[in-house]
Length: 305
Ligand code: RIB
Ligand code: CA
Image (tube, rainbow, N blue to C red; front, side):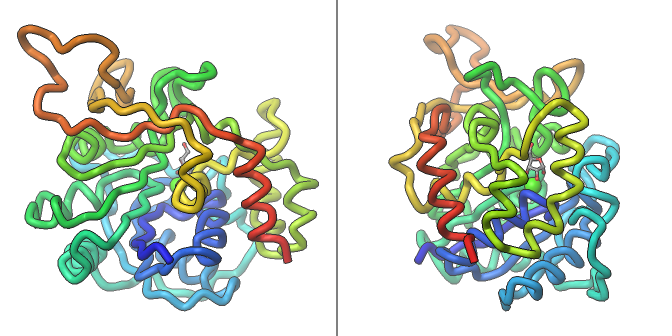
């Protein structure tokens, strides 16, 4: 089983991804970050949802705001006021041990053997490699849900240019994606291609997933979309079946300010002769196509009760 750290701003699709990861991964710990909700709520959600699905893994508290930009509102409109559809009472505390320390120590204890799955803003990862650059060559790989490169017309979901996780902290994303860490990106190019309907979710006979996703489905319907994109779940689908993804290799940079804040850029032509923004950046693995039906079928089979 793939040994992972699950770094999340746990909202509804994060929860779907966690339930899926619990079926096929060895989860050392859940590290929480701001994003869909405040980081304290993410800790509470991770504990609540883990308890409801019978998952017993430690939960850690990480970054509460972006590296440089002012904080922006949580995604309460999509994920509900509490981030999990506002349907369950949550008695769990938001206090927890430090996520950054856990990430650093876990990588040092598992050199070249630990995959970090990052499905929220990349702030925790950026802080960890800033504090302990020695871990960069020891991370087996970082699998990220984030970014958008325009395939199938998917160029952004927060703005026309930017995907939510990257837009929330573009400085952190630029530092991490341009680093020497081996990164696999699952951008909107593929995550918007794999959707489940309300009937699909109900057919899982999974009361917790059905309950928390009602609000998300209603939000989608209000915006003319039937069903919900599985987004974060595709990180786990990649770990299970990388062969179902078409991968393009390119260095990646992130626009940090102005109208296209959070836009992810890949190298489309030969390197510039002078100020090349990709110079020295590791070529990363970008999943730009996906065998959507295979991914959806595998997810449904894994989660059906
Ligand atoms: O753009 C989709 C991403 O933003 C997902 O990780 C979702 O959970 C939200 O955080
Ligand atoms: Ca997320």
